[in-house]
Amino acid sequence: MAGQINGTTGYEEAAAQGLIAGINAALSVKGSEPFILDRSDAYIGVMIDDLVTKGVAEPYRMFTSRAEYRLSLRADNADQRLTPKGILLGLISKNREYAYNDKSKKLLKISSKMRKLKITPSKVYKYSIKIAKDGVSRDANEILTQKNVNMNKIREIWPEIPVFTKEIDDQVEINAHYMGYLKKQKADILAFKRDENLIIPNKINYDTLSGLSNEVKAKFKQVKPRTMGQALRIDGITPAAAYILLSHVKRKSIKRIA
Image 1 (cartoon, rainbow, N blue to C red):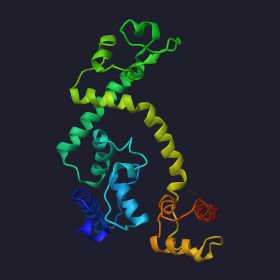
Image 2 (image 1 turned 180 degrees about the vertical axis):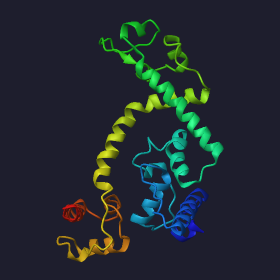
Image 3 (image 1 turned 90 degrees about the vertical axis):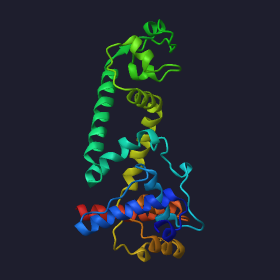
Image 4 (image 1 turned 45 degrees about the vertical axis):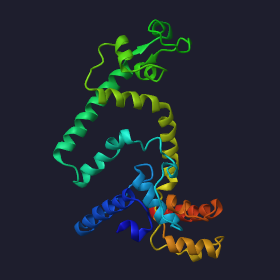
């Protein structure tokens, strides 16, 4: 039903919208704030944001290419990204919550231990691991990012690293291999969110914003974006138009604070 109403195609898309609709219906009855997934939180957030801000000219299907932060939105870390939100909403069973907390503690224990263990390029070469001979010591997490290095190899060097399960080791390896890329992406997300999360007042009068074309004003009034991030992603909104709106919202925000 949700998919048919909103113009999407696919069982997963419809189920995702139904899930969010159900959560927010319950929150509305309780008088609580709505639950919103950000584009950097989940593909559900990407899909709903696209539907709200871009609309649909043809049936919408969720593809990974639609997400700017797909390196973060991986299947292997979905539990780590979304389970805490489910716990806060009361949607997670006690067994699932225990499993999540147990896994998180084990991952933290291993990664914390590995950050403290360091080795020089000359010493690590003895284990047939080739890194730049620059005299700079690397920690175990950095060594794990090298070619053909896994947790078994890491424990040859540091046998004191705790052993839990293959699932935990696999997650540590994946996290290490994505580490450099994710550090840059996290910085990009934080920089973008500084303005993206800026709330647009509900009662804003777009007709009073000089410099906006009537077409742009009509799109803003139709979509009614909640944040600057949503406004920026509306089809046909130019950077110049977004800057005019951003300047107006920031001025209002400063006046309100003053």
